[in-house]
Image 1 (tube, rainbow, N blue to C red):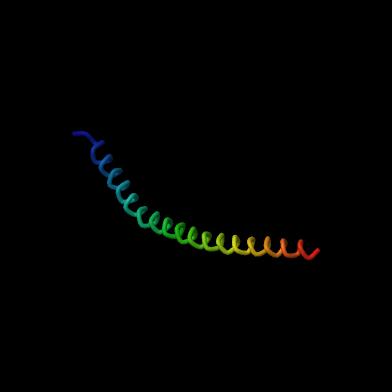
Image 2 (spheres, rainbow, N blue to C red):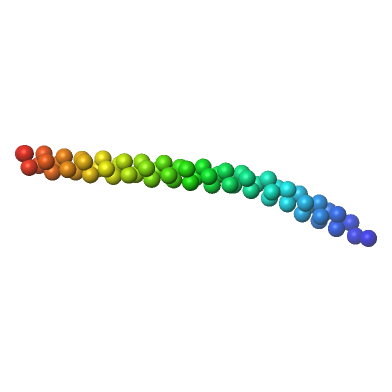
Length: 65
């Protein structure tokens, strides 16, 4: 009888447990990344609007000079 089979099944079982444990962790990381992307997108919109206003102000000041 081979002694490799129990070791292999143990390793597969151990790997299966690790994979199973990793899934919720990766799901949570993905959730956090997506939330961060949403916040960054909002911030990019705010910065774009600020830049638009600054350019308008620059144009106004150029006409007054």
